[in-house]
Length: 115
Image 1 (cartoon, rainbow, N blue to C red):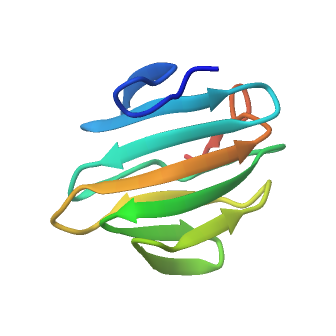
Image 2 (image 1 turned 180 degrees about the horizontal axis):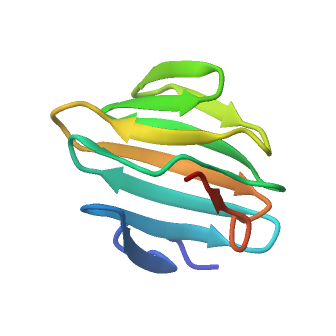
């Protein structure tokens, strides 16, 4: 057993415009990532057929958009996104947003982007 961290992840990756991620757990049944979004960035609306996700904000302020509306999340708060729910996370603030993203099962091969 080896500890994982932002400095010692299983995998470091880039996504979107200036966004980064660090895989902390990467198994078929469970994925845990640390992700960072720079100010005024967002991801594309999408949904997952099988995976449920939990976003937990560590730093900054997030906006989660779903088919039910927009929810503002502060550091120390989280939100559950069930399978099939269209969603996207946004950083509308002026500071970096960092959050833990837990997906069960993994979202690998289970992401459908909205047009």
